Image (cartoon, rainbow, N blue to C red; front, side, top):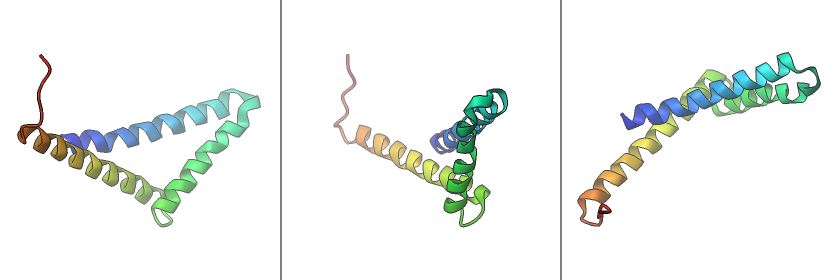
Length: 88
């Protein structure tokens, strides 16, 4: 479950960023420079995906899922070792 949530968060964040930058570019004529952020984000995803932005998104999702699983494993093992004392 942690891997799914950790993987979906970057995808949702990228969607919100792309949507908001596109909305700014379309609705506010003087703020076209913020609309260029979409192209910069696509460039970063292209670099991470070896030339394909979709592979860049998959790379980010896989990395975030792995980090989420590692964090969940750490907290599970840390709680079992006896070092965890819940507050009263």
